[in-house]
Length: 387
Image 1 (tube, helix red, strand yellow):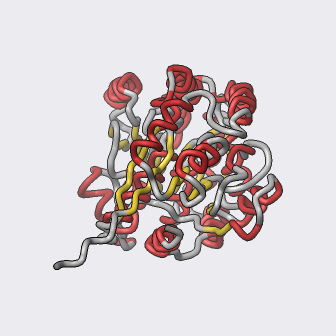
Image 2 (tube, rainbow, N blue to C red; image 1 turned 135 degrees about the horizontal axis):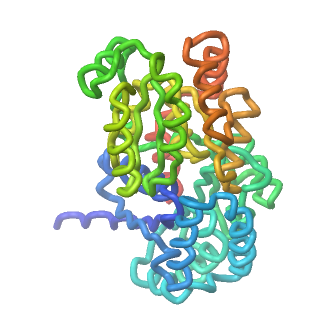
């Protein structure tokens, strides 16, 4: 008689599409598990906030609308969400019925949260439905503590907590996390980011052959998240006066209206060296061939820039969202990024850097000082070892 196969372990990964970073980290985790050949693991990624209730779905839509058009308003919205999720101390209120049914049906051995609003209450419910044997884990993507760091990252029912930085972990401890439950791992990026590595000559050749740009000009990357929050048009107008010295890469995310506007702008300014793309699946490659990236304070775009070593200019037009302040504060504190609030400030920052002189080199060296080599497979093994 043949021995029965060991039961497959199930992991429920909790996320939400508020922005794109939480979902990206959830998919990165699943991708690494598959890449490592762990066929003994079943993973289900659940956007539990929007799937759980109409109120949650509306909240996610409102979050992304504010992010795209009125970032400053998030400073009010954030406090409202903080208060609502704090009411989840004993269990999930909004969407709780959906979530508890999901637990009963999928019966995970581990619940892994990638979102600040899917810890408190969610872990308590997991323990109630499945018993104390279920393992509860948080991966917190914030770069630093202070304003913008949600207290809802920390649940009393968490078993293991991973933070992106020591500063983030220290703040979680201040919020009540037992220190012995915490570890640091910052480079939770998809396998594709690690597969693409260009040497300097290859990057210059890529500019020319793939993007139709000059090999040697200072290259500015106007990036955006998947949902297309950006200020590309005013930035391009401000950079016009530098068009003889720089070239620009622009991606628009899933924002077709802005993409069409930029196509028209490009036709009207044929003397500007510009590569334009809508939604792009090669953000990493484009960042590798750039000398500076202009981005909101997104935690994951920042992580890619740090991994690649591309100096950062943070876009603060319209104000920063509270979560973005955690990222911007960390990199400004370490002298590894520039923060701008207006298109003219962007043009001055690019002008200051475009000769790759002392200021640009200082920013690049400061960025490199914050980087350390990590293998995501080690992180995956550590998490799976908790099962």
